[in-house]
Image (cartoon, rainbow, N blue to C red):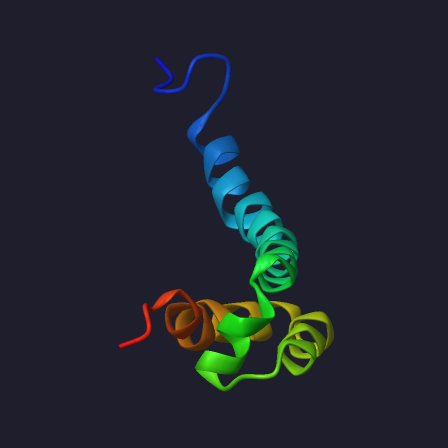
Length: 82
């Protein structure tokens, strides 16, 4: 008896090991560029980061650039000024 209706465990493993990372590799850079473009210029100036440079990094190195953007830049852009 299969734990997954209509499929097998190996199909689920294939889905998780191949398609999920591929989906993330496509979705993360798109999210990063859209988020960077929607952030007001004043926030970029407050955070002392260059929007164009980060968009270029995300486009040229999609996975690394979007992960760095999410971990380093986005928290600073979302922080409230003191």
